[in-house]
Length: 228
Image 1 (cartoon, rainbow, N blue to C red):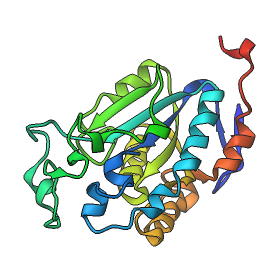
Image 2 (image 1 turned 45 degrees about the horizontal axis):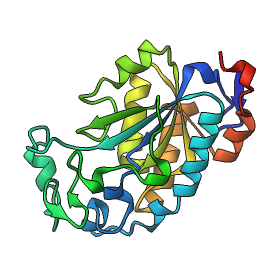
Image 3 (image 1 turned 90 degrees about the vertical axis):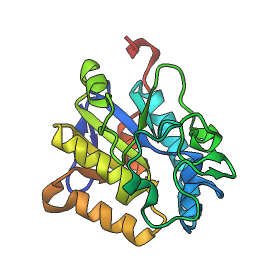
Image 4 (image 1 turned 180 degrees about the vertical axis):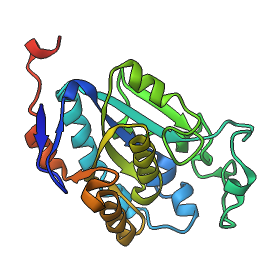
C-alpha cells in the first residue's frame, strides 16, 4: 500500500485500485470566451492550475493508474439540460448559445473539448456528464466497479461546484477519496479554500486533501516489470 502525507491523516491506497478523476478541464470553463467568462468570471485562477494538472496526469500515468476525464456537456438538442439550469443567473450567453468557441457546453463543439495539454490518451475514460456530478446520469460507477476501483483522486474545476459534487457522490458510493488541492481551482479563491475545509472536516467526513508534491512522493514511477 502507498501512503500520502495528507490531511486530516495519511491516505493509504493501492495504485492498481485507484483512479485519477480530472473534472471538466474544458475550454468552456478555463479559457476566455467560454461559459465561465460569459458568466463574468475571471478565468485566471483556473488557467493557473493547468501545469499542475498536467504534472498530476504524468504522475498518475507513470504509476500505471487508471485516468478518468469528465466534460460537463449537453446533447445538441438540449434535451438533457433542464430549463432551470439553462436560464439560471440570466447569463449573457447561456448553455446552447453560440459563443466564441461554438455552442456553449454542447458536445462536439470546440469549447466543450478538454484542453489540449490535458487531453485524454488511449485507454483513458472520458465521461460526458449533463450535471455537476460525475456520477449523475452517467455510467462512471459501473465502469469503475468493473475495473475494481475503490479509491479516487480528484482534480479539476471548479472546486466548490463540480469537483466537490463529484467527490461527495463518490463518498456516498463507498469510494475513498482524496482531492489534490493545488490541482483544482475556483473562480473565487475563498470558495476553493472553504470547500477544501468542508471536505476534510470532522476527521475527513468526505475525504482527504494533499498537494501534488506529496502525491508524487507516494507514487514513484512504475518499473516496466511491474506493468503486469
